[in-house]
Image (tube, rainbow, N blue to C red; front, side, top):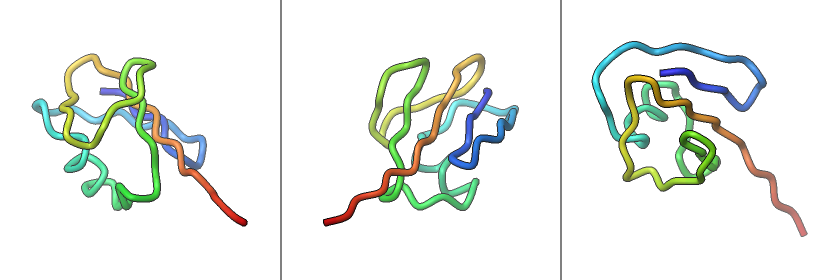
Length: 64
């Protein structure tokens, strides 16, 4: 699985299918601070990913 991280770097992770929330925790990323796209489609942390999937993790910023 190929992952595009919020800092612009890319990382490849081998392994079984896992919940996106668990993948984020493994990468020490707070799921409440990011949006995840799986194969170009925004998904929730409840979805699973693995194999040839591509994840893009985007940190969102809000202000007032």
